[in-house]
Structures are given as C-alpha cells and as structure tokens.
Length: 110
Image (cartoon, rainbow, N blue to C red; front, side, top):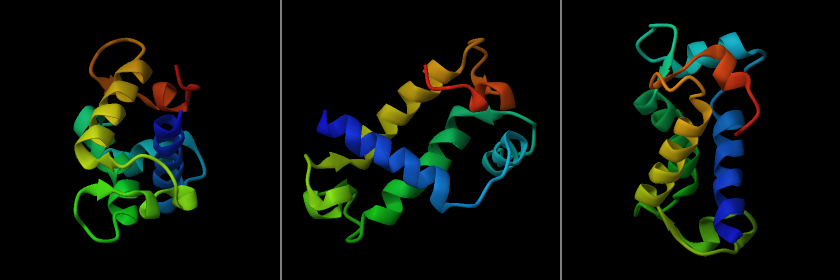
C-alpha cells in the first residue's frame, strides 16, 4: 500500500510540476518530445521520472523515507519507479500499438 501511495504521489507531482497544462492536447504536446503526435513509452517514462528526480535530493537514485511525501515509506529506486511507470503506460495503451494518443492519455487509469 505504501508503494502505491508513493507511486501515485510521484505521478501526481510529475503531472503538476513540469508545466501547467490546460487540456489533453497540450499535455500530449509537452510529452511528445519528437513531435510525431503520439507518446512512446520512453517519452512517457522521461516525463514521469521528472518527479522522481526532483524528489531525489541527494541524487543517489533512491527515494529514502525522508525524500518521500510525508517523510515516510519504504525506499524506492529509480529503476523500480521506472518499471512501475512502464507498467502503467502499457495499461493506458488501450489499442496496444505501443504509443499513447491524446484519447488514451485522457482516459482514466486502467
């Protein structure tokens, strides 16, 4: 349960900290680093790991309890967080094409 809270907090921070986005199209444009109109798994991971990197104050690749929201929780490595983000990407990729469209980005988490 704590890991889920941590991951949810990191995703929330990633969604709000990078930029104020007012609609799904703008959100897609911000994540779409190569400008092809869709978001690849690597673009998604890069965007979402922003929060992890901001929270990792000592830069050791691990969020320790004092770096986690609320100052509590089990440490999580950048690699563990990356894996969680990749799993979420694949759940959001409703048509299984390996990319997220604006529609898939705006859909509630699956």
